[in-house]
Image 1 (cartoon, one colour):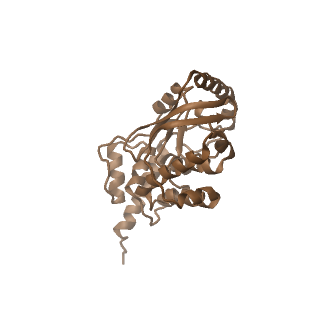
Image 2: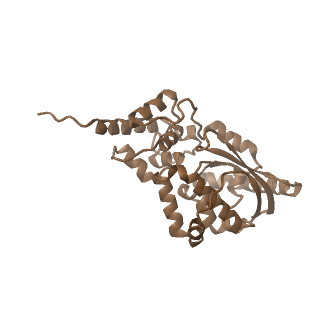
Image 3: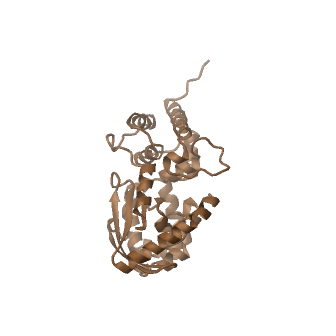
Length: 291
């Protein structure tokens, strides 16, 4: 007697195989990552896909293991972007997951080499690419030294909300930290409204509540505010006070990635950013050696 596997099992295994095949065909350089000297993996590692799509590593591993877990359209969208899927591959991904594509005709923005080159061209203006959860997906040299030594941190800690409430250097750099952190928490809550059931969002929230009494107190107020630009005063440890205009430009749907820049408001700040950029360039060989 032959037992036929349920359709749901077949879908999960087909989805797992498809994701694995897409991951293995993409090189680190295609998504702007540095290939270390001892790297043996031909394509992307699972943790790199998780980082690029802003999901938990364990959760993504379960997905490739065909475990019975729920996958939201927003997460599928992020995976399609991270794995550089074209329109046909994207449609196949959503079909296997039994989900409706929220933006079937939308090109998948990702941190491509061209976008990374644009970040570098913006130097000495600090700039980064963030997703809606405030994960820092890519940044230029000046931004890497703006609030802390970002390149010295593990990828899972490169999140603006996490750093604002837990990183001593980041917190010391904010001239008006209490107000800025309250505003950031309110923006984070507003952004999270469409992702309440997603594992990566719940994991970050749990980490924040466990690590920061300040965050727990602010979060309990249930304040919300939409994303937008504002003036920032940053006390940089290397060059002093910086007066900056913070602006975000969306790279796709509002739930996706955005390019964030910090433009100097005066000549003194412009000169100090140039000095900071010089310091970042001088430190680049050491960073490359670590990577």
